[in-house]
Image (tube, rainbow, N blue to C red; front, side, top):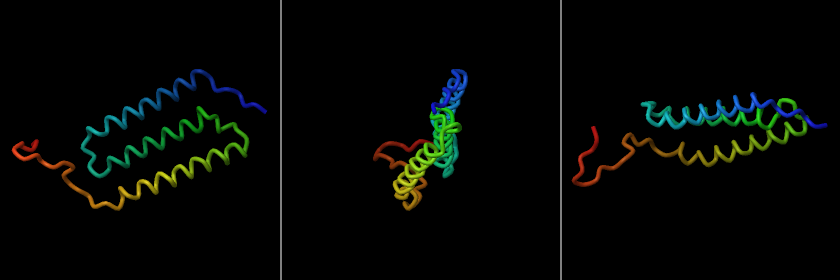
Length: 108
C-alpha cells in the first residue's frame, strides 16, 4: 500500500528548517561557546536527521517493517559515528587551537 506524498508546503517548510539548522551550524563557529560548540553542532545535525526521517522519508505513516529498518539504519549510523567520535572524546583538551608562527604576533 503506497503512502500519500507529503504536500509541497510541508516539504518546503522542512527544507527551510534544515537550512536554518545548517545556518546555525555555520554561525556557531563564530560564537564563543567554548567546549559546548561540538554539542550544539551535533544537536543541530541530529535535528536535521529527525526532520529528514519524519518529513522527507515519510516515516510517520510508513509500515512497521519500514520504520524498523529505517530506525535500525539510523541507530547503526549513530553507533558508527560514536565510534569515530571516540577519538575526539579521548584526546586531551587543548585550550589554544593554534600554534604561533615564529616572528608573527599572536592575535589578541
